[in-house]
Length: 176
Image 1 (cartoon, rainbow, N blue to C red):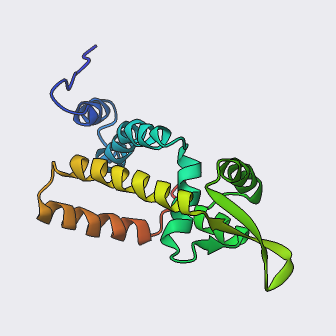
Image 2 (image 1 turned 180 degrees about the vertical axis):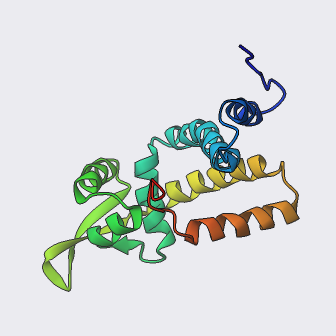
């Protein structure tokens, strides 16, 4: 009943060794990469969310004002464009917009091209807040990545892009 510990590392190598002992025919390379990606994401998420909270936002609200800010002047999008960029439902967007509007960070305006539609525009306060929060977030993320050399960061970026553009939905159990 051996329980290996990997106190010097992130635990992934120890888990892989345990599985190799139990199921030696199983390829656990996915755990080595995807497991670590998940672990990193779970560990950087709380400090990033703390940055947004410092500005009175949650991650979803930040995503809305950041999407508007990066869209360029006049920082205005239709709700359908917003929820497509954010990959959320229209209902999820509506609640975020109501809170952001109440805080004075966005305004909902009539669409001059379509009387049935509204536009969502970032206010000057919203644009300033989005920029401050984004700058602090990027400073934190840069510190995280300081563990890698410039060449390592470039290689990792290239490899992650390649993985992201690959077929991420292979048929589960296709060999069964």
